[in-house]
Amino acid sequence: MSYYSRSSPFANSAIVAGIYLPELLNKEITPGEALDWLEQKEQTFFEIRNNFELPANVIQNFIEGKGSNKFPETSYSFGVFDYDFRELFPEAIYQSMRKSLIEFSRKIKGFEEGIIMGFESKTSSPIQVIRDDKYLAAGFENLYVIGEGSRRAGGIISSAVDGIKAATTLIE
Ligand SMILES: Cc1cc2nc3c(=O)[nH]c(=O)nc-3n(C[C@H](O)[C@H](O)[C@H](O)COP(=O)(O)OP(=O)(O)OC[C@H]3O[C@@H](n4cnc5c(N)ncnc54)[C@H](O)[C@@H]3O)c2cc1C
Image (tube, rainbow, N blue to C red; front, side, top):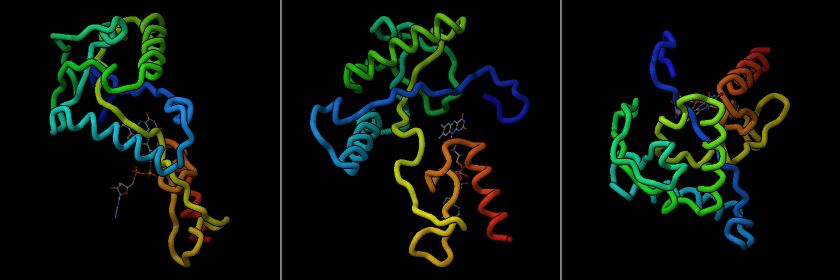
């Protein structure tokens, strides 16, 4: 992670656990219910302390199912506290993350000394704006929704390119 010169000692990344909610919850659910489920999970993380401190664990301890009484320095300014992630996630999610972290730690020396913290419930916008070839949102005469929010892009570069293409189209 670097704000400018790539000299920060911290790497900041996320582990994505893909889930299929009907299978996980063993019932049919609507898209709205799926979003509610994610929001509820985020709420649960917040309500442990009712502030922006984050539940966390050292990766090696997460893998071994143990708590951590000491954390290495972190770039997260609100602070972290030890928490058992199995109380926050269904077992299937915990196990898939655990297996991935074992693999990362095997391939990247020192990865297991890092901290796993917090929860980001979505990897990109969960809704898609319908728009035409000129990037105009359906039903509007002057609304151009671009980048991540249009769900036509899923990251920094693709969002930027989407924005450039939309602007160029508009100018032309
Ligand atoms: C923690 C995290 C890590 C990520 N890591 C990566 C990564 O490693 N690689 C990668 O490719 N992508 C990553 N992403 C995703 C990436 O950041 C987004 O896909 C990308 O920034 C979307 O660009 P955007 O221009 O569509 O939206 P944004 O970058 O969100 O820009 C939207 C802008 O609109 C402004 N805005 C909002 N409302 C208003 C308003 N009413 N009036 C005026 N301005 C307004 C906001 O302030 C903001 O500046 C990450 C995202 C997060 C949250």
